[in-house]
Length: 245
Figure (cartoon, rainbow, N blue to C red):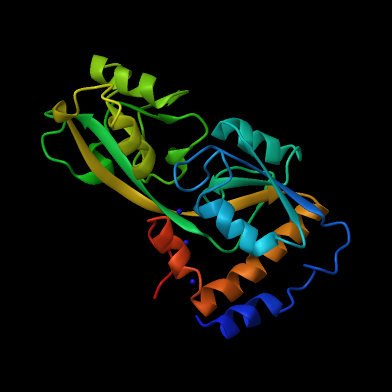
C-alpha cells in the first residue's frame, strides 16, 4: 500500500487543484477502513493516513473510522461515509473509484503441502476456496472456483484449512503473513504461493460530495507522483512504491 528540495515541496503544495479550496461545502472527509499495520493504524498513523493528510489537509479536515471491510464497503455504497480505503477497481457497484491507485497488493494462497501435485497457478484451485468476507477475489480470477467460502476471521479460515474444510485460502500478503505469525496452524505443513497482484484504490460515495472529493484526490495524486516526493513516505513505512520509475 505509495516522494525534492524545500523549494520544490512548497511549489507542489501551492499549486491550485480545481475545486480544492474553492468548494465551500468540502469541509471534512470521512474515511472508513480496516486497520492494516503500517497502513491504516487505529491511532491515525500509517502510510495511508499520512498520504491522505498530504492530499486533503489543511483545507479539508480528515476523520477516519476503523471497521471490518464488508461493513466499510456497505457504508460507502449507502452514502453513510465519504470514502472507503483499500479497494480494488470495480470490486463492487454504487461507488466512484479513484483513477489513481496508491498501493499494490500481492495476493497469496495457502494450502496443505501435498494437496497439489504440481502448482500451476489458478488452474490448481480445485476444491473449496475461501477468503475474507467482502474481498470478492473471484472477480479477478480467470479460473472457475468450485465452491467459495467467505470467512469472518483469518483465524477461523486457517483452522478450517487445517481440518480440511477448506482446500485453499486466499489473502493479501501482509494480512496472511501477520496471521501466520500467531501460530494458529503449524506453518511447516502448508505451502504458500502468489496468485496475482492488484492495484489498490479509494472508493467514494456516489454523490456530489464524493465526486468532488475524488477529483481532489486524483488531481493532487498526479502532482505528488509526478514530483517524486512520495518516495520517502513509502520508504518510511517500508511499503513498495507502486508507481513505475
